[in-house]
Image: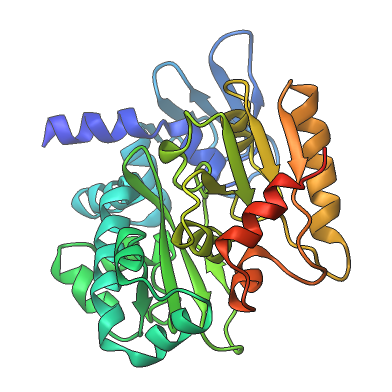
Length: 327
């Protein structure tokens, strides 16, 4: 028990926890101490001190003090064991849980014809590709039962965003793509098969570029913004493609593109409002400033790579677009 408690304290410091709870503090001195209003009782003058080095707090107003566990017990009115369970869920590594969810969704796909029809409509017809990308489906109704049977608490599943406030599957009626980094599932993307539901990621980082490990050594990389764009290109035989999961790259994704000299073929949507091409131009400027060669792939107006193939485009025609790409 004592070892478990120390591991909890190492994973989450008292100061970090308080800041997550929106505690506002200022340095109390040049040392490791911070002071702010006490969250445990009403006051107008700050008397709640936290020593970041010792991971302890003390309030001169109400006289309460102790470590992270003591603070959580007092603030949330929990027993010691309840406090341990709460903090264990708060600091749990989400990757194993997301892996379980992704596997569950993958197992559901073949059982639901509406999901398979949707993939066919989006141009995905290769069973081997669908299996390789671990595409799944969230029918709703059974994820909670499946994951709680694996020992995961309802509170943890809800905190991760897998369940909504009513305990229902948050990805209901969505085709699921696991997003992996370093061999671990870091997020899930749900693409709605019904207009009534929005597409969604779980809260938190999307991770790096999609399937980056497979192309990171390639001297030329095709960058697309959507996962269905990625999938149809992979299906058509283009193995040097990756996906940014949107037009705006996070810092990790940008650094991945800049980790060595290469040519990046920017293949964003050619949409009516020009937002895809505007984002492409801005990204090209940033990449060029880092010494990366960029080429703009000009798809027919109103198309993205996914719709290009759905509407009858083939690998030879897309290769011609790559060859005609402009700086």
